[in-house]
Image (tube, helix red, strand yellow):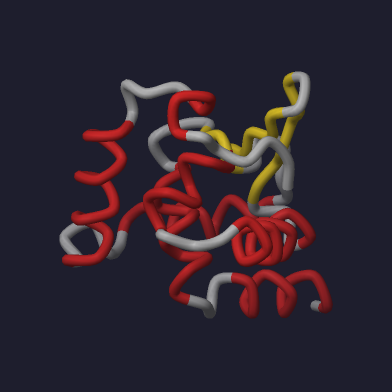
Length: 119
């Protein structure tokens, strides 16, 4: 039950929901997430670490760059949380705007954005 509560708390925050919705489109560099959500590195780090601790996202490093994606190797109830989120909020104005911003900025690399390297 403890892990379930940890996940429920992780998805109870609007910024973390927005992050999960962005990651539905695939792996993202931290700098992309920061730019779309208009948050500073410390805020992005805090939220991504909570999602990671809950088992909802995974990360990898490529040199000095950090990338996040939805958890692929997750427990059944992790997948249930992610499925629930995937089915909902797709027509929400904030989520729609985030996706539009991401689409406009996707063509730029992290270096071109001046993005942060690690979280």
